[in-house]
Amino acid sequence: MGIIARQTIKGSVYSYLGAAIGFINVGLIMPQIFSTEQIGLTNLLIAVAAIFGQFGSLGMVNVTLRQFPYFRDEKNNHNGFLFFLLAVGTLGFLICSIVYYISKPWLIAENIDKSPLFAEYIYLLIPLIFIIIFNFLLDTYNRMLFNASFGLFVREFLLRIINLITIGLFWLGVLDFNGFIIVYSFSYGIPVLLIALLLMYKHQFLIKPSFKIFKPAFVREIVSVAGFGLISGFSGVIVMQLDRYLINHYCDLGATGVYSTLFYFGSIILLPGRSLIRISGSLIAEALKAGDLEKVNSIYKKSTTNLMISGIMLFLIIWGNANNILSFLPASFESGKYIILFVSIAHLIQMIGSVSGEIIQFSKYYRQHVLIMVILLLSIVILNVILLPRIGVNGAGIASAISFLIYFLVRFAYVKIKFGFQPFEKKHFVILAFGAAAYFISILIPQLGGVITDTVIRTALLGVLFSVPVYLSGYSGELNIMVNKVVKIVKRQS
Image (cartoon, rainbow, N blue to C red; front, side, top):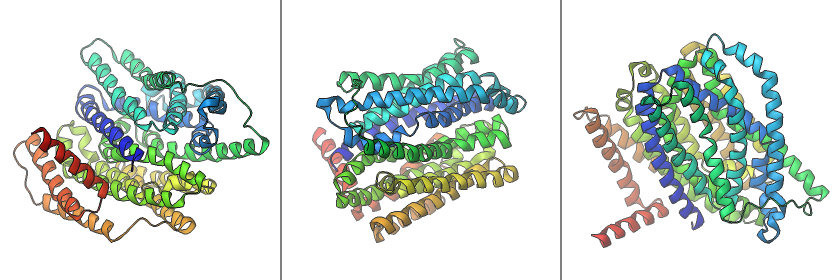
């Protein structure tokens, strides 16, 4: 897969290293030294800022992904695209600031009793909104220059190292909680700064304005793409962040902390998909521009197979070790065990869905992608409103699983109808059977020694039971090639 393979491998390495550090941060340290309310605050601030920030990008993420191939011309400063991007981002931040100050009294009144910490630190939303807007914009621009892995490095790996240091300073008493939450919030700006510095180093921070390409018809198309992208992107971020706000509303900040911590373990399933989908999306946009539907279909099929295998492997490891995970956490987290299951299922469904959303989003049917995102958003809102008051925080996990199943089915059907692409074959059902067999064999095995011993053995067993049949079947040529290369390197070194 060329660029996709290289960028995916690099991005996956950063993601997995970041996941390991994130496990230390979220799974081991924070539950021991912070209250569930304090953990809830860190997640709720980011969630609300992300919703504001996606609105503040004014659809320019979608414009960058879809229209940048028409601007691409390094000799002519990419026709002033970066200047245009940053100018719109600045306008978006000003609009968000106005909305924030108008809604601030309501936000404080809404949370002063149930979530007083959020009301106290609500002022941190302004710098976080600024950071998130320009992180969205610069990271997407950098992705379109075929360097998707660097954004993952600074956000998934480096940022978590900085968070670990900040948590350590709090634990050592160097920072009180006030100092911690301020440093924690502003540290999110470091990835933005580093992406900007990288662009400067590669002579791609080209902010000289140019308006030659902005013909009336092209401007109308950009406005249309931005408008629909704003709705789609806004819906996407709300989908990923709204559950925390709804949990805080129907339960409290402590429940938000429990959900956010356990949500992290289920979200690990998405790690291998992040880098692959990011770079695949860029190549799909270029292929659709060139009318190369055969290439799009090839990317769709290969991505689906590889993401299904990776997703099932991680699902087995995470849910197979759910009891061991909970044993590392305080007793207040035990009631949320099934959050891990349902969030893991939701993210496995996303992995199996592969790049179907990107195919729709970057095609002439991008307007319909907005409708599909709205269906997902409504599903999450309706199901959370129904389930949270009745069964508590576990309802948010169930709502995610059902909503993403609906989302997957709608995307799959739409791509099949409009493009004739259907990535699933008999081998995919066999891969699912391999995963089911590995899980049912593992649950027959009793606890083996202490928690760490059992985790290591159970993880290794699940990995062998699933990966060996997949490898021997040869269902993923790319993964087999990678494994064979690693084996050759080990043999050569030994």
